Amino acid sequence: MTSNTDYAAAREATLKAATDLYSADGAEVKGVDAAWAGVGVK
Image (cartoon, rainbow, N blue to C red):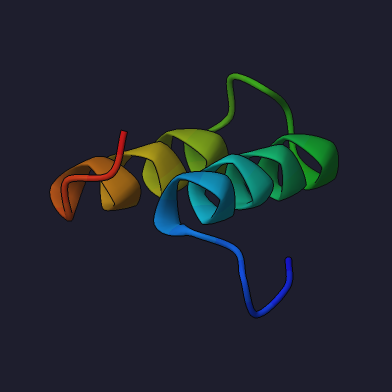
């Protein structure tokens, strides 16, 4: 991410990081997705 990254791109980057570190269907990825959804970023 850079200083120009918007919220949607940050969501994608953090979802990718969680997927890379854990499994795509893991609780961590679901938590990151839920957190972004909680603040209205989809």
